[in-house]
Amino acid sequence: MADFNTMRATAGTRSAAIDAGLRAHMNKVYGTMSVGMALTFLVAWAVGTSPALLSIFRDPATLQPNILGWIVMFAPLIMVFAFSAMINKLSAASAQLFFYAFAAVMGLSLSWIFVAFTGFSIAQVFLVTSIAFAGLSLYGYVTKKDLSGMGSFLIMGVIGLVVAMIINMFIASSALQFAITIIGVLIFAGLTAYDTQKIKTTYLQHAHNGDSEWLGKAAIMGALNLYLDFINMFMFLLQLMGNRE
Image (cartoon, rainbow, N blue to C red; front, side):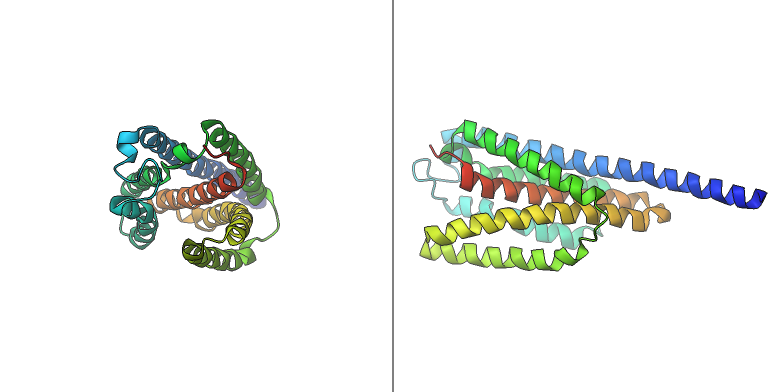
């Protein structure tokens, strides 16, 4: 009986340690994501509200990107692929620095919104996105339903969305753009819940190993995924709800 009580107490202590570790892990994910988000919007605001800085990347009147503007526009996508390929070779500190560099470049690519949309509507859509993101992420964290089956479906949806956006760059269909916007909001809403649950389950699967370096990099990768979900949902909602200048 004493051995049983000892085993039960040990199991309880281990479970409590994992729960505390999970809370710390999720706090790091959300904290890293929040710093990256703040950096993105600070860079975007600084460049977007300065005609001299914005003109380096776009025509301030038409907002058409120049060569450097096109490079900045596609740089975040290239950086995401590079980050995914290099994550195992980077230290946790280097991965975090890379993420912040990515967030700054994303700010450059989004700077045009401060010319295209009113500041009030940007703030309003950011608030709406924040509330929706918080609710969806909380659902992904607490739900007992397995959301892993959504993953491949949603990733296929993202690929289809990118293809449709490229096609619409040439045909400029307002109806197709509206459909892309609605579908984009739904896809990244689903990804927010899915990615949150994946971050949680990944931690629980590896917590027993005690590899703090791996868990540190996993937190940064999780922050990147949730950051991308938020940014994309924000941009689609801005196109849907934002008031243009």
